[in-house]
Image (cartoon, rainbow over all chains, first blue to last red; front, side):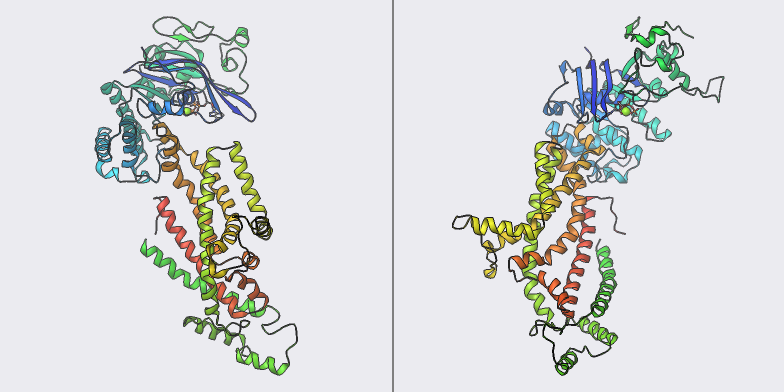
Length: 322
Length: 311
Ligand SMILES: Nc1ncnc2c1ncn2[C@@H]1O[C@H](COP(=O)(O)OP(=O)(O)OP(=O)(O)O)[C@@H](O)[C@H]1O
Ligand SMILES: [Mg+2]
């Protein structure tokens, strides 16, 4: 049984100029010890899907459908019910480590309060365990860092602190929302190593949200590609990369610069703009930007169809490996 | 931090001196003088009076001797309250104004801040709208309107009931006689504090680290108190600094309506009477308090946010 099983999830935001359909009929699942990559353009609903799973939607947001965590539905759950899961059995790491830690609290206290709250640990015990966790995520001079304020740490170290914080209660699921986007390249690689290590050694399920297909290629077992709040293609990492079957996935892959590419120096882009989520195009949301679009695509929405080896795509066109 | 405070206190000396100088010459430049009463004073007597108070000397010389007196802690005699020195007047009135002001500030903090937080947590709900509605009323209704209304209700309407409160009497400062004036003083501050706290708490709750705290599974109360509150208090402290300085020096309106022997009325009366030394005295007092409170505010910032540096 998957530890996190999202079924037909919809997320809507009420705004002054109409309803925003941020997530539309998304179904996803993650098994223990598996890393699921989520890719897609900005605004495609990657974050909001999992914000719903954490009960962290903005006040104007509503989730519909099912989010089964270890068999129990979290959609519509109370704050108290979420609080037994969040930070304990399911944790989230956010994109911006510079602003994600409380500026006026020492690192040690921010870590310890998780253990005090969920595990009933004493302050001393919590400090010892926090220290061990900082060492585990390879923070140098860990003992000294416990008594520092966030602003005294670099971005990379702060993101390690965030990871340590997420790991404190040995969660079954970790959601990493663009954990490296705000960091420079060398630090990115270190952070990804730590996440890889967590997945391998602790058998934690990892959801890795990113723009960066390179990150997904290195870490994920399976990938889901999102467009305009929908999943357009899903499959294991190898086959998605070698044999994309959705025009959008194909486009994304073509946009990723590759060193081994013969056409070096030429950057491809997907033409057009992501759609307005308040007025989604009819039929397939991608059709206005799709070079394969036919008349049918504008009238009818393709369903997400399974077509073998755990792969599925939502497209009428039968794209073959190029 | 000690050296920071010491440095700020040192800078305060030239600041105060500048305020004193500007105020001194402005007062002398204003038409009229301390002895222009309703009935004209015979010229010989006026000349004598002016000589007695050294007003016959050139202004520059008056200024120099005033500064010299100040340096010795001597604020000079009052021109209007003939038997008193300015120091005596302030020593009598200031403790009363300060006690009332301090009570009013504490009342405002203990009522305004919690209501502001409540309104922020229930943003756009009925309780938010009612709290903000009342606060808006508190801000727009001036105290010279509010005070008589309260007197009508509590001193006259509730006469001979257990809720009756005296007004217009002081009786050496018995608690009962302070309730109405202190409440009146604090109303505007309660209202402002509620509005400022609401806005800053809403802003604080939007921060990424509050989202992190919620993602940790902490109960919402803990998220608010431990993670959001300190940030939300920064604008409150900014407002309270000068606010405290103003309240401690009394309010002309409240002290006049309730007949309190504080120093609030000296500000206006002193200026109207051209009581040069008294005006200088209360100006120096309130300027010093404002400077002092600004230093206190800067120190408190450091407690609320460790990123604030004192160098
Ligand atoms: N509180 C809100 N009110 C209205 N719209 C919102 C709200 N929160 C998010 N949205 C919208 O939901 C859509 C999906 O947002 P989401 O954060 O999931 O995108 P994303 O795929 O994570 O993008 P990014 O890569 O930029 O993080 C966006 O268009 C965003 O504008
Ligand atoms: Mg996002």
